[in-house]
Image (cartoon, rainbow, N blue to C red; front, side):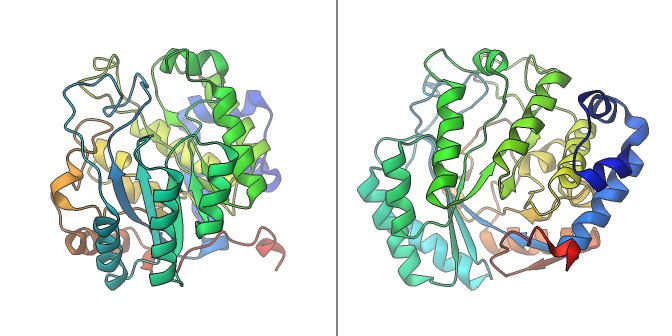
Length: 346
């Protein structure tokens, strides 16, 4: 069954259910996933410099620590100079991709975002610029692209409409999020999407729906991670996603999307001391150390107990390099673009 998934990049729903629900297949899954990632990317692991520019957000997602209704959150915004300083520090440390991530904050108008993106592009023409700023209209996405942004990350979180509404207020629509992803693709971005593993009310059918949606979208990047509750949200007492299921889904994704850039997320490292290393061994090939100023890192708290909030950028970079090497891989400073889909055929 695993060999069939590797060969065809697809399985019937019933077979996917077996792989998702049964631990008996894990050893084979991880073995084949690692072989495929080495076939496409060797032992290279790409680093993305994460800059969390604001924790203000107009949305009220039930699982998120920076949701609008969390009156206890201490809010902050980085200005253009703050962001460029993060880039300067990151560039000196070897980062060639910068990821500007934040809540959906109306303070950052199209003009402000374009000005920031243009400045980064002018100062670091050899770098990739990734945005992760939530749902926007097509005109905004186009403006950011024309200003110099290359990539856009927008996790769909769950592809099942009923499940989506259990995780969000009624004003937030899965159809809108999906349309944003299609708009981004049509404009020409390298698009990243993904989903939570083990979120409240999630079923195996929901996870299969996530895989089917990704087969339609064919994103360049796929980011998944375990759901971790935040104590100031409606889901504070819910159980979190497990390491086992998260790693299993990483491996399945690698076999279904061999060319994709798949991060070993901070959330994996939060639920297990070796979570990111295990993610790499299950098929991931990206890590995203934090370049944000240390003074604001604890404030960008999407979930509880997030790791690496007190480290300087150089410390975080050095620590990750050692961890990645201990897992049998190596950090590279290239932009890390998507592998050619036909590499297998030469």
